[in-house]
Image 1: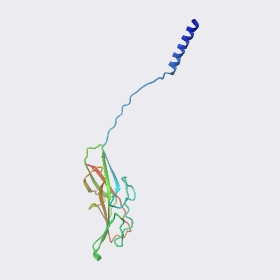
Image 2: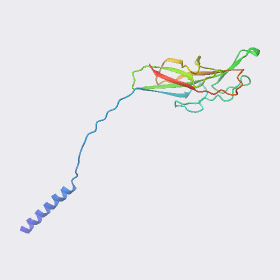
Image 3: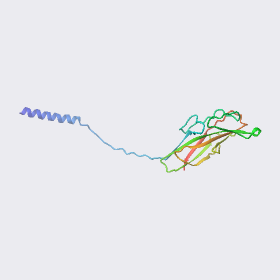
Image 4: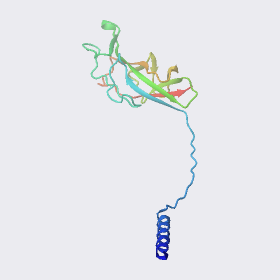
Length: 183
């Protein structure tokens, strides 16, 4: 009986030792998380359904609109481009090409209900006349395009470039910088 009791006690002791060996040692902690939420707006360009498709950059803030070959006479405007000649016959002095494009301004984490949109030529152009929605756009001073734009809705705008018959440079090439400001 002693042997049986000794065997039982040895077995219980071994089980307790094995149980203690397999128990995991743990530790715990806590991490605080904080951050400041900043209000933001985002401006992107898109092709307008009625206009010439953007060459690149749809859905981004850096897009390209390429009119391709343009001329005053004998010009077959592609879909979405309007071409006009200023004057008639011998009194004509310039021609223009125009197309609509879209600007989408989105807002997050702001109490602003609308935005202003300005545009400015990247570099001076003393030969050609650039307009957006009838407003002349030059370099050195932002032109007001939209005073109270609606967020999250693509706004259609029309770019028009007037080229005088005296322009013999063979090209038009510039960039228009747009800035949306939350009101």
